[in-house]
Image (cartoon, rainbow, N blue to C red):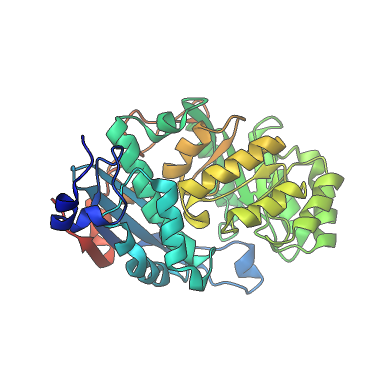
Length: 398
């Protein structure tokens, strides 16, 4: 395809955003944003609820982005917020989405910078980049669909399946009997590991719950715990030492997410690996953990750090440092990214988001299988449309 002429550009506003060249053969014509509210079957509590910092979780806000190009290429992505923040993400995305119209959808890194600087007055982390994440992921989905490849293969996969562990059955809002029943069921279904929540006011209750799970599943089955940032440094050290005989595959978020120094001291003192990172919302924040030797498992979340473009930067830093990886939540996205990470990672199995899509992911022999469908491999379901509370469109669909 030859470069557009000045007359063509004048007649077509879509062509005006980027100085044309021979390599530019398509433009973004239409962007649709949708805010959906996914209700949870039962309220969920972790240690943050027991300390009074948060209320039980009852719903998840989902920001969907759908993008279509002038040539008919399509992609969609999503980000999310638990408790507050969903309407704010949607509002910010509405303000900046028009910056995509007329741009080459292949220039994803440049477009991330453009969207970020369009809203830089409110920062380059947090809600601002979480709004960008849905658009960034949609562009990556489009690029993989255009190539007729699963996203993992577009990025360059190291494996076609990833070790999978489940979290959704181990919350503190569930009595230990329910946790044990869930763990047994998950093991029978072929899950590769389980994670249970800790961080109760009495650490002895935590230890008893972990001991019960370990006794049920056996010494070799992978078990992790997650304190959700609710321990101080002395408590994390004491409980961490008490947990050493449990052969856990990690202790997650033992300290405040921004305490890189505290995590580094704990990681050096314990044999049990330390994992954290899910609450951070920028590459720079993850770099603090990485450069300070704060973690054995880094846990970025593509929806929180700004999408796949930023996640790939964290992957490169983590691999250079020799870290293992276990992204947080959103397995529909993170499965592909885990498959492309050089070191054997874990992907977190949460079934909460399954009603949003027509397709589901398969777990076989303890591993989640990368689907052979193009892009992310998902279609937004009618149920997700029914849960939608707001929409916004820019441009015109062909």
